[in-house]
Length: 234
Image (cartoon, rainbow, N blue to C red; front, side):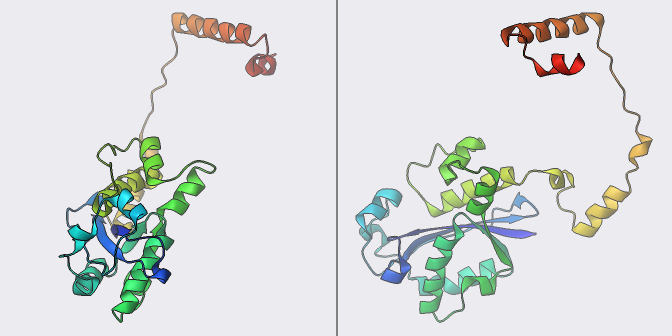
């Protein structure tokens, strides 16, 4: 599976009111492995940044003045993402801006060019309901190093998102050998007869049993005799 982790930086919050994309960062992953084939562009938005936006990403009007227009990189972008699954944090925001830029360029919305879009923010809200699920919060929760993220940057954030996504999607399916397609993975799993394995059972020693009972007794004492397992055993 080919996945693209995508992030943008913008002049403000509303493409409907004329805000534009000023940075696009994309990280490619194939079969859950980063390929190093990434895409990154700063863009001239043809309008001033808002002060609030500059405080977030640090990209000034002067820095962006000599950068290419979106129309100059649209072909490269569409070729790069073609047929891939996009993973975007708060996808509605980025897609709103990208679709508006594509409309200006006379192109179809981004979903028409890709295999699908996964919103990692919605995934995180299902996994961690009631908690903060910003990219920074997920990095802290999932132990992804984001110490270099003093300011937002599209390529940096796309890379952090890739690491966060891998940790959020670890599960039984990750035990399948990387690089195998679905049919190969199924054949590999079927070839293993688990009945051939004899699992050893290690019994606790007398000292270990005594130490365990002592620990349970301490817990029972600390709870005032309200430990559930004691009542169940009785």
